[in-house]
Image 1 (cartoon, rainbow, N blue to C red):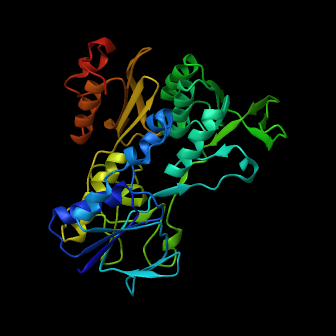
Image 2 (image 1 turned 135 degrees about the horizontal axis):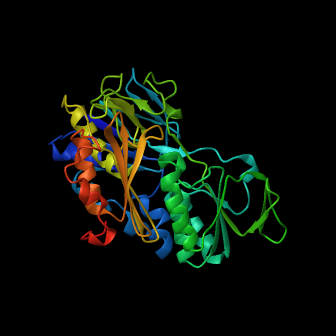
Image 3 (image 1 turned 180 degrees about the vertical axis):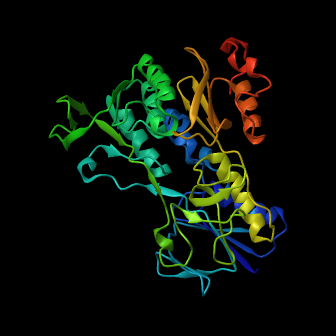
Length: 406
């Protein structure tokens, strides 16, 4: 192969480009991204970076010199709009095209369209560096932040805004925060933590109308009759896979790019990695798509290896984290709302929960419990059951016995 094209200047894309060079590939490596910024890390955008101020240089995955040293050509500020797999060309928004011999698709996620009723003067979304910059500027001038959506980004931003001294109200149609991911038991633990920190949670809440006022504030009316007045709003409408540009390509799609267990697509010479890749994880015996940081790194590396000829499947135990105030949640495995949930420990400072399917541990959620997290991660990889955990007693000891925090 003379040229490998990586579409998506993301964590997965950079990891793939790095691995190509690490394995001795000497052809051209072109990394293409829609944003003009050097590839950067996203998790701090709702946490530390928002709290301390947005510094693009500090968020960079690698500096400019790193790409130069490895002869990785950056094409930034160029958006892919189409793929011709027969001619092996990627069409760009500026009406030019790039040829390839091998292709890594790592275009990740994009915002779910914002409902028209919420397209307000002070409404923000948060995924990109530019969006974080605009939100940071708005928060510096705001007093009351209303967040629509009690998911991970919404709650992380709520915690950050409270640390900045803002009044914060979080709305969600669900009965508990993060309940779509972990269910009501774990959601209620986080609800208490946020309420103790001064966040107002309005759950099972429906918005009737929202509109801008002449004085520059925003009014939100709820079905209960309550009226909220905000000078800054964050709308967490969720995300969708960024696959529109692949619609006529012949690459199989279905809630992402469909891959075999090795991360190869149905088209020769095309692999996928990161948030966009849906593959069969043989450790769990199911098709999955994982949207988290660790998976993006690991899949970027694996996709590059696959493109260079490795036949190995990609099998992993997914891992995810979120930090909100002093609560460090770590999630491992594949927890589902249909699983059985056992709370192994719960107090004001920590939480340990195991998810199981057919008796076998499928996932775990640990808050401020790093030792238990390590134990449960091993148990999932070893396909063990909750009942046969060899150190079950350790999982139920008081939080103070843990030797470190995550």
